[in-house]
Length: 440
Image 1 (tube, rainbow, N blue to C red):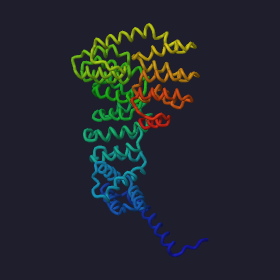
Image 2: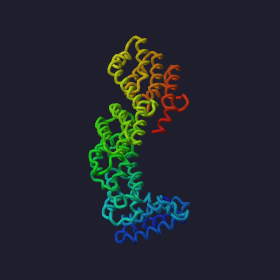
Image 3: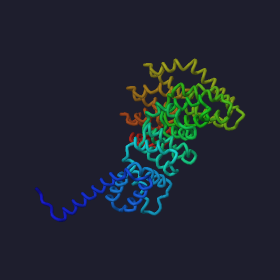
Image 4: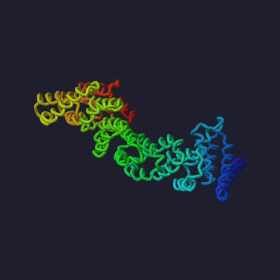
């Protein structure tokens, strides 16, 4: 058995004393009021040595030992910290200490505490609770966030939007059950929840969002359509038919603001089935509707035509005739063994702008052809067809060709990517792949 010297014994005794102090604190807090725990918390943070990690860790432990009655103080401190109200420099660390202490409480205890005091919480306590739940919460936490924010929705709306977006982004499965969450949400927080959905950018949220268009008495259609446009601008087609149909119906709404928002959403959805209606809306009496409709048409087609309904209508008729009479045969020719037929089909396809994402997908098999000439041809064609977003399948396929075994194909893929995206990124595959990851 090892015999300690006097110095070691003193260190050991101090550690035992510290552990006993924590144990006594944990046993004694049950009888303290919320106010008393607030006073105790202030004494703990007043003793923090900001230069000592040990002091900071001990403070977190001691704050947690105060138990759930201290949650009010912890939430308020996090809320004040978020508003930059920490005071002098030595107190700036207290917000982080409070967050760390909160993270040690089970989610069920936190939600139960908040549920029992919803009407009593101060603005800072509500703010701190939203921040904490945004960092740690899941489905149940999101429901609690809506309940906490509702009484002060106007003041806390931006915080709710940001923190709820974190929860949704971290737990995409929530979006599949979003309709029940939206159904339970208090009306004052609905606009901010819609904003959170847009910020999260989850494909699974689109169906539930579009379903809200069927209940306009709860929330105006325009913010919902804006959220749909925001989400769809970040992800690639195809999009759910129900979403496209619900948005398309809004193009016939009586409110110009709704029509304009629906035009923007239809454009981001790349719903070419709405092009006929969009061309009609170029003659709408409202300037915003006309401008947003023109923007949607340009986004979908890659064309830069002016707001000239006659020119757009002529273009539309030409595209529709081509798809009806020529497209089927040309698409078949892409799989032909006759190289001349393949070249002819590709040259014909690249000039079209209706359903251009579908055309790009038809070209993808050529990128795997054994003939490097055809692989290079497909790269060049995809560049000319263009892409509206860097997460589309054709875009990703072009990036893969940057690693092709043939230098000529790599050069064609690089030129196509620069043409389609307007980005001037060096040739190596890793450079484009890294840029894509950063964008995501």
